[in-house]
Image (cartoon, rainbow, N blue to C red; front, side, top):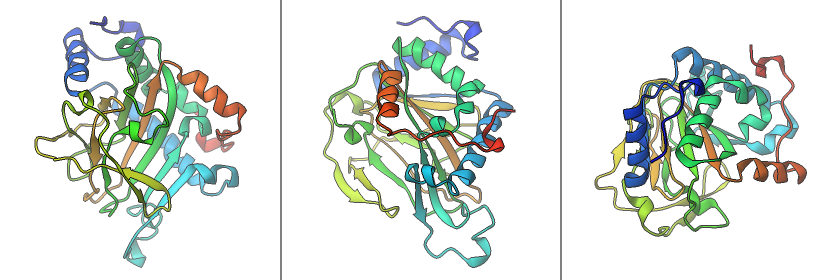
Length: 277
């Protein structure tokens, strides 16, 4: 059993909560951890990401990392209201921290990294992305295992994926839902699909009986393994549902360095709005 983070690591997690998190990850393949960050700390991340998404839409070099889902039947009066994300049903931004390095200076990133290292040893960020679901959107995230998207589909020990909502989340607004223990079996069969964004996807069809939805207040997060089956439903609430996802692994920094040398990472956005205040 790993030791809980030291107080200097800026993680508001007591020893009992830390040990419960470690046990849940081993037993269930996921853990819900409430109350790690203050509203102000999460709002700092939200401000950076809101402005980054706006700037990325007008930056040609960032467009390949921006994924947009058309909104079907969006009323004209809602298109620019913010409820539909400027008329889009869902927006995703890959490698957000490469586009906005100020994210790496936030209390949220530092705290997640400290917790990941304490749970899994010497790990570092290997990938991150952002998913914004518009209000009352039509795009659900289907059942899948993250390992299904990787070239190497075997189990990846010591790899952890953090899902950080930027507001309170419920089943109605599209919180994370998991199948406990699914990480202990083999990778299930996934069907290749073409999503409405035009991007390829992977979709599994497990028996959802016994699935667990993780409603969380702002400041909490979920953690899961690459082989844990999970999904997030449509956002049926009247406000956008925003989440930042950070993946950690033993060679995370090295993988990013190789991608940077190969030109597969975006260059930072230059706008004042994407700098830490």
